[in-house]
Image 1 (cartoon, rainbow, N blue to C red):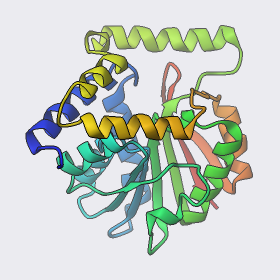
Image 2: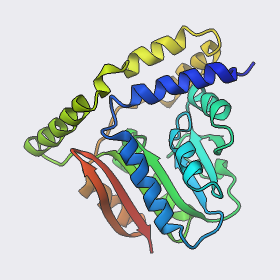
Image 3: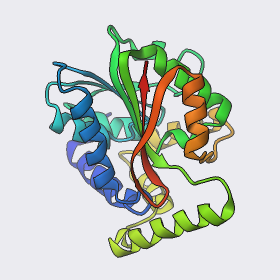
Length: 254
């Protein structure tokens, strides 16, 4: 049995609030990413957008409002978040269950044309450098000539003095905007596990995470991402927005 519309709406709203603790100026970052899409797709009707690590469809929903004519394919491996996205933001995208970076993950997308822009927000930092390179190559293969990857995430600079400074600036910004007042990641998931409507999906999630193994964060600096992107076939890489170590990085395919 699926999740009810009312339950999905409530859980997605709680997700949106919870995420404000972690993504510095989250709404502004979403807006900047949409600005990039609008600019790069200004002369393209019905652009194809790929939302990587879509969660419950937060970015897809915003992109759909900005470009109602866009075709959006949203991919994630989390059964809980995918079900919430399909139920609450079902009109925004076609949701696909796949493990980004895993061998053959691009085949699961069932794309019939080249992608105009691939986007991700606070998702790719879970990938190690070698898996990230493989993933970037896969994304480059999906993009049409002149297409782009837009990645909004935390990119701490190499070296402790500078990384501590950018993290401090981000924390101060989050405190000023009240993001710390919301429940945290652990509390949100604990509440999900206790909800009868989501209990089975949560068990599936735990099994999926155990099968995936490893995990953890691999927050690489912008310079390292740039190296990997160029090695994967992207011609130009540029940060277009930054607060602390929260950054929107754009890579253009040659």
